[in-house]
Amino acid sequence: MFKPLRIILSIVALLLVIFATKPGTEAILHGLAMIPTLILPVIAPIVFFVLLLDTLMLKVFLTDKEGREKKIYRISIYINLLLVGLLLARWYPYINGLK
Image 1 (tube, rainbow, N blue to C red):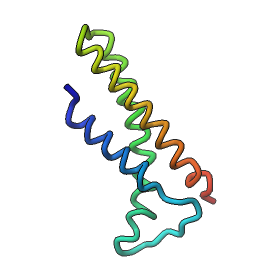
Image 2 (image 1 turned 90 degrees about the vertical axis):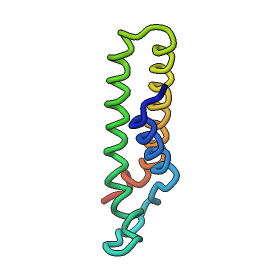
Image 3 (image 1 turned 90 degrees about the horizontal axis):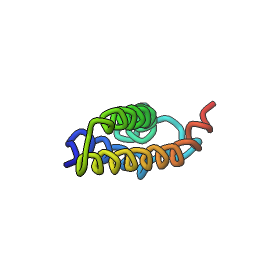
Image 4 (image 1 turned 60 degrees about the vertical axis):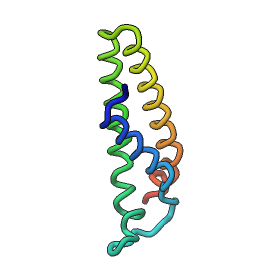
């Protein structure tokens, strides 16, 4: 079965895709408005690289697995790569717009 930390990482990545900050948004330094303007832009690259690291580790562990476990690891790799692509697509305009 899928591991709980991997599920949480996928949920966080999906939330970052859904609530991606729009390019040119001014940073707000107080209140709840700082979540989409300060917190999410900091967390997005961290989650991006953790997904890539998890994909690498899944590929390493895949060599020792057989049957059903191997299939689950491959599905996890595809899910991670899909989430990496979605994060890149949604956050690239914001990061490219930083000056």
